[in-house]
Length: 130
Image 1 (cartoon, rainbow, N blue to C red):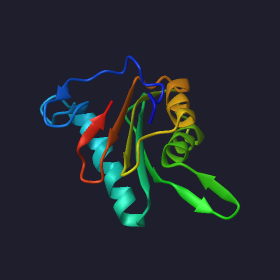
Image 2: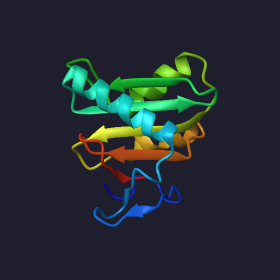
Image 3: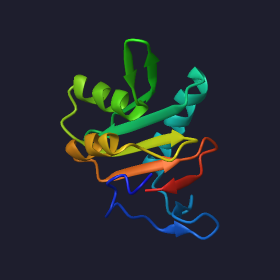
Image 4: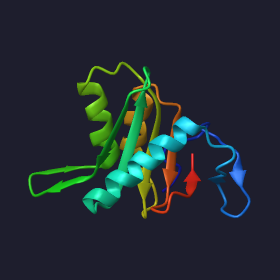
């Protein structure tokens, strides 16, 4: 991932993984959306899992969709679920992937909804970008 449009969304790096966030510095609510994203990914055997938290604290988790007629990233699905449920803004988003991280369009969707935090974690839950 180049920069994913995430400049300014900084967190405290963890020394053993450049750019990673330690569990000690991760907000419990941010940890919750990582757990939800990991669970969705594992449950569906999907390439990506994502979760977002809206302005009221409601959470939405999703996986990527890969159909012949429809392809959506996990973040796109999670943001769409929040919007279609009436969310007016997002507080945070998390993406769990073995890949490089969110596409620029995914990061932009989170920012358009006011999301200031976009966490990227590995399938084992290690946060490697924010």
